[in-house]
Amino acid sequence: MSDEPIDPTDDEEIPPQVELQQPTRNLEDVASERKRRKQIDNDAAQASKFWRDTFSTTVGRREMWKLLTAAQPDGNPFVPPFACGPSGFPQPEATWFRAGQYALGQHFYQTWLQHAREGVLAMLDEHDPRFVQQAAKRKQRAPD
Image (cartoon, rainbow, N blue to C red; front, top):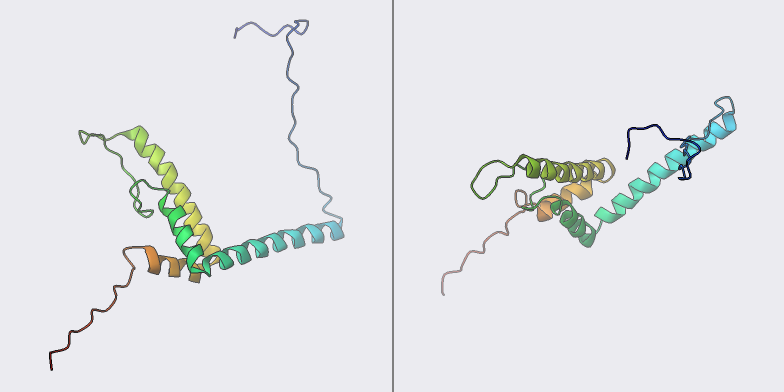
């Protein structure tokens, strides 16, 4: 690559400029605006139904928990990461990499809460070690 300006008569192909423009909307057209808003509402309703259905089953909650814990190497999606090397010295690059994973996991979790709060809380009750209910210990009966 050179600092010289590009010569338009050069034989090299110059890639065309791609313009990514969204189509313009006529806000005065009430019918099309109503249709667009109805489509947005319909998409949101379908997404909420999808997440409610996913979290309504034991298998769905288990698999979503696996996805959430995969966002962190230690398996705890609710602890911000701070990576250290073998000598205990902080590793900023690894910390930032894990912070990205943590942010993605938190985005998933908060999105799920918006759509299926009861199912997400049930997932935590079933799989998060902080919330798992220990089964009551049976009392041993005295021999008769």
